[in-house]
Length: 509
Image (tube, rainbow, N blue to C red):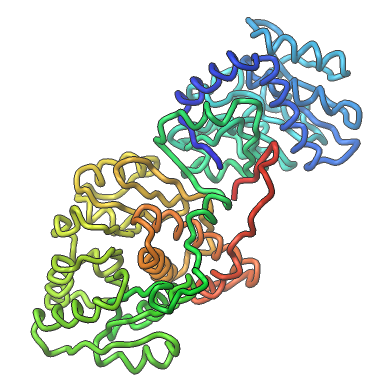
């Protein structure tokens, strides 16, 4: 399991770790884990230059390079003046004895770049507790690392990024690899800092899991093992409806494909019996593409109350409902959507056109086992607070959910899920999903997981994680031109295999 701690929570965990194992042991362990990643990046005989800040993040850089001098040419660039913690002083002494060269701070960016010449860079400037902007004396070093064309490893967080919000400064370091210590920090998973992290590893350094678990779950994220624990398993005697039977209310003459993609997403997520209710005029088009799913025709002339009664009758055989993908935006459809949601008692996910019709009727969802899955534009309209500015996604989703009581999955490369208790950040986002129809596939996955018994927040976070894995898998199979159907088809093959007991460092998807 991985933990996501705010900087304040991490300081408390560090203090508990210090009391239990001591600061020198924690720094030594951090150095070992960082050195492991550097070995994987460099091989033998490499030049490694670490830029060390004035605090314990810089001490971790000394500790790491002390482990690497046998096979590599190692230099630490640091300010020799100023106070030192006991652990950092010990790490510096150990590094010097091991043969690490120590240089003073360069005068400017050009000199910093000259020190890096031919080397692998290590960003040990500022960690989780740093305040932004960076101190003036260290900005040239950060800029040099950021502009460096060879690999750069960042310790804990890339310098110039905010560990809580994901904000970045103009001097922020864009790392190739980040080794964060003990627990993830939310800023590492949030845009725009997410793009500065590179390959992300979380290293165990000796702080007991019980200490990390004791922190309030302000933020959380899944890893492969936690995802697998959430994913429902079919019992040996399961029948097709018990395996998951979502009802999908979707499609229109303009957007029949949305209904098809949603149904495929539901089926490939493991549903045993998928029913699609759609306008009669487009049912033939859906049946041409949906061989294994049941397509139910809805009259386009009958009164809204008659259609609602029919949907409620159909839903008696289902375990959950998805409503919205590709529906018409006309007033009659809006009346059907509102009346059905008001009368429905099944777990429910609302997306796309369903959100349009609910924009002023979110009260219909309060108290129901339901969730909504807007993208940023839809969320701006639903929230009534306008465009979501960069760096405000967390505060915006918190305000919205606490005001409306509606569990929300806010789509994006850093998809957020919030139910009023914990902000779940999805780590598997990928640009491969930036294509029409992938949101419909996601809605189908959510509907299946709801129909299999997951609570709305769990269905949302498991679906987002799986959706990202499938997007990545599809991108591996097709380097260019991934479409939403590819993502649906990749769901089965993208399920990770269980991993052995957690090692000292864990790759974050």
